[in-house]
Length: 538
Image (cartoon, rainbow, N blue to C red):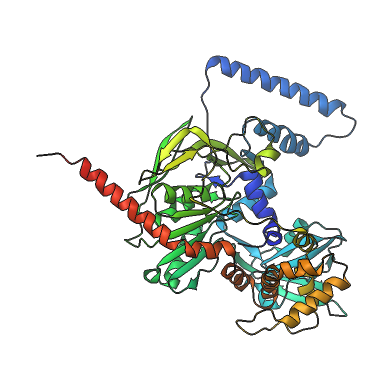
């Protein structure tokens, strides 16, 4: 899983997807109508008249001119939706465009992550592997000072990102300041189609044990997963670590399609129903083709929605062992309604239920939205919603997916917080490669010489730590520095790979493969015994 600083950078997409949308959508609906009885209809008409009267008074008498987009799009409509639930949301034209780009998994631009830094500058975090920005030679730490001769001083990260986007085949001139370069560097980059893939490259952790990280669910997720499994050679897989940590969800159908790849044909994946929609049950249409290798699924408190559909289905069918923290607990389905002027509405229209029948939605009725989103509760479960997995294990609704095996990431100590808060590893890497070749040999590891250079850099730049803290956190420092330097010297995928290979939770997942295998065996035997017990006696 990406380091926390990196997770924050996927910025507007993941935060918007999680904090605003909550991450699961049914099919888009062009138009919709709701029937009301006479009394309700009269009440609605009366309330609309009152709203119109208030708005007219505001428009005519407020001290400053009133902008309709601010008062209605950003005021009245969001305010109304906040009274419903935390996940219904209105999208202005730019947000709606971003949503559709994210769902489709493609946009046109140069292909890199950027973020704002103090002083009103925008910095390159990482170019995507194979993108125009990557091929042109842009690298982490470059400060973007101009785009097509337009200075970027005091532009927001979003405004800079918009300047970098454009029609495929068009040229954009990017001027950057780079550590170690006395003059600005100019890159002429040709924009292209940029795939926004949420499935990162699968690889072997050890012979027979595969690892794959799914960051979210867009229109290409299930296809990308299938392509990765075929590339590895799925018949060679003896165990799979499926990483859904930090995955906020996305498209309902894609969550279903991912679960379909691991379950037997015909098994229930999820169902949903709402006040105006009949119950719909989703079953595995294709199935795993008999490939029933053990699976360990990694989740945390940010795994939500479609990620919970996948982990919940695999848990209820005893197909996988779930490792990590209790998941977020979002069991609501939004339908996206396109509106006029390129705006959109994501409205909660149904609840979804895992195969055993649990509703995993957390209670949000007596708390602020801030508490709902940011205060995790590992014990938030509905003791009245008790269900059983296929083998008879007890599971609960009301509070996300409770893992079969708990893993709580250790809290950062004082020095680790200091280094993380001040971007020590990123800043050192930027400085180091300002005077060193960015080409490193395959299999490169952090040497004592590099560690000493890093140590001296920290002292020179007034990072606060003691030698005792340095010695205690030696392994963490080495892992973090390796990840950051791989990000520049190689690419994002290689960096994520070396990070996963030394991740304590991933290593624990490997050790739990026999237990995941035993879970499946127990489930099969229980089901057979249950079927035999129901056979008619002659």
